[in-house]
Image 1 (tube, rainbow, N blue to C red):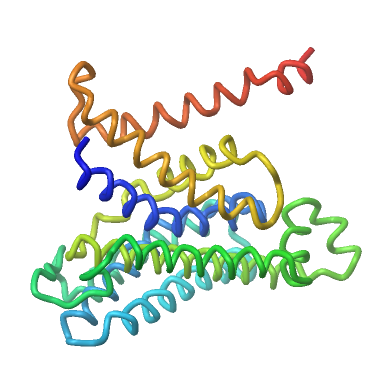
Image 2: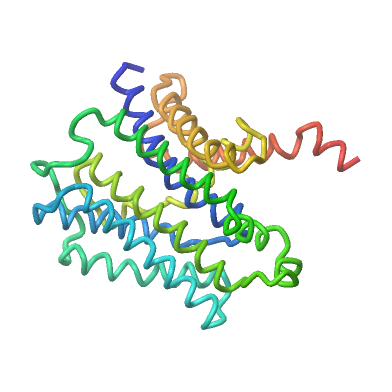
Amino acid sequence: MTAAEILSSLEMGLIYGIVALGIYLTFRIIDFPDLTCDGSFVSGAAASAVLLKAGIHPLLALLFALFLGAVAGFITGILYVYCRLTNLLSGILTAFMLYSLNLKLMGGAPNIPLFHASTILAQYPVLTLITIACIIWSLCSYLLTTDFGLALRSIGQNKKLARMYGVRISLLTMYGLILSNSLIGLGGALFCQYQKFADISQGFGTIVIGLAAVMIGEKILPFRSMWIGPLACILGSIVYRFIVACALHSEWLGLESSDLNLITGLIIVFVMLFSSFSPKRRKSIC
């Protein structure tokens, strides 16, 4: 790989690291298998593209994308808490409805090019993304060490015990969904500004890529500290992108960009098999 390709993998890894951090909050912290992310990712990208096209400052576009992602998480929370739908169905329905809403947000066009628009990543994209990722990591890690974060973690560990101690499960679940999808929306906006276009199908596979990053990160940094866990998500995303780039550039494998889903699926299978055959796992089975 060339230096430009290595930098590109690092940049994409940092962007999807923020997405992986959002998925980590739902799947690992509050134990909620949220499938909203495929829709909230596109919501962030669409909002960013529309605002940039209108001449709005890129930073304001990022903030609005973060807000739209939070709204998507709020809708999922409403469906789950007040409409009494299952967690999976709540996320699926929200993502399903967001497809039409995102298309309306984009003016009915399936994609919006931004070739001449000014973005936050126009200069020094690596340094900018590292700075944003570090800020997000620090804020999330600190939040998880507070009383609020402890309450969030408690509903993911033992809901019955948390309820006995007066934790409001429904309200905190909604907060977790809002935080998660706001980060995913921010990731979508950064992806849009990095690629300089927004597409209605950009969110396809977001959940799988994010989970792959989380699982890889947990193998790289197996410690369960509230500062290490979020960091592992970002590192896992970067490693995932480098694995994909190496696979696509290996001549003997003969893979193409259309094989990305195959590569991602195989990575997840390999990580899960590695977990199954780890010494600790084998000992517990015996």
